[in-house]
Length: 362
Ligand SMILES: [Mn+2]
Image (cartoon, rainbow, N blue to C red):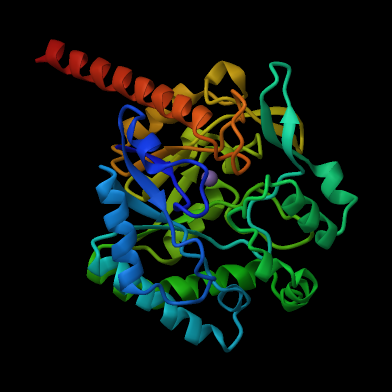
């Protein structure tokens, strides 16, 4: 296991690499070339420069989140071939630089969705929150505009203005795409990139849909244990794996989080560990990482990772805004640093208990 923090790059992130370096036990960042639009090739010089910048700060790039998938690939239109070729070239460039983990998602139009980016909690901290009733009464364009207006001036991942300025056109393009079509387009994409992934040992880690049900009547296909197992079987090779995201799968309280991890030994390549507080079906807010602050048992989640031999990067996920920090919503330094230390503490306790047990048995 390697503890990491997501970092959007010097130009886009309020958090600095030197600050990340000072979080005990964090040795890597999960990063991206945030300014390159989905579908374009990542030039190898840009990847190398980013790698150098991170290395100079005493850290390493533990993985990419994300190389985004162009809409034509999700829709399955003819132009997808060009964009898949571009994706393969990007993977080839990443492979040449020794970067071997790529997180991506296959959600149509919208990436993760929240209805409040700064819900105030009793202690004064603010968090991202979701209420299905709000989504049910708003049109997608208004929803997009509101989300962008409330992001403290930061561009949020998956909410790139140039793409989403055309929300109506995008919805039209997805009209004929149902769940089966979207799934088949994902399988097609994975089979096309399998060669370059296997050439470099690159692990593709799909991020589950957030929240884990259809939003604005758009299909969603990575929402439960059954659905991710279906994808693992459809392209049954180790490069095809999962980003286990506690908050995304856990948005649906019927999902058994440790059960999902245990069903996928060797196929969980990356983990986002965090907590949510559920109020009612379809109504939740994000919480501190600590088990007692939310609905999830973080000990059981980390134990499932530990016991299945998970050896990829973990990162704390969305944090609360605390101590007066202003950042991209969910991506401040302070609460994510607390989250990292908590997860590392759970891991150390599990590891030492295990070793003590083994030495007693010996
Ligand atoms: Mn996540």
